[in-house]
Length: 65
Image (tube, rainbow, N blue to C red; front, side, top):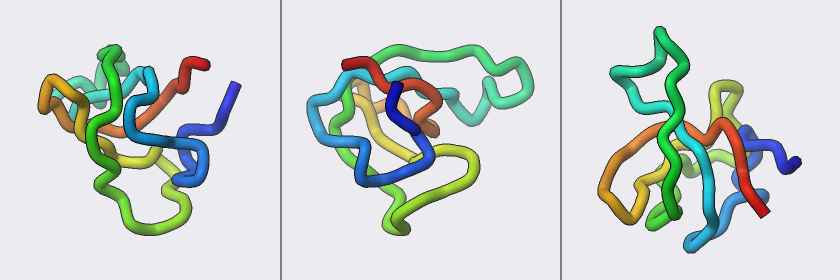
């Protein structure tokens, strides 16, 4: 499984699971397709922030192949 904390592993159109800001305490994951990558740095300890096609924004926790 690819590491969601590394920007190089994430591409637009990829299927991922993110944690939304309001779900950070529960860890509830939301599945979707990456629309935009919002984190500019090459890595982030809590996951790269992305916008899904559904316009939801969160940090990548899982990347599906």
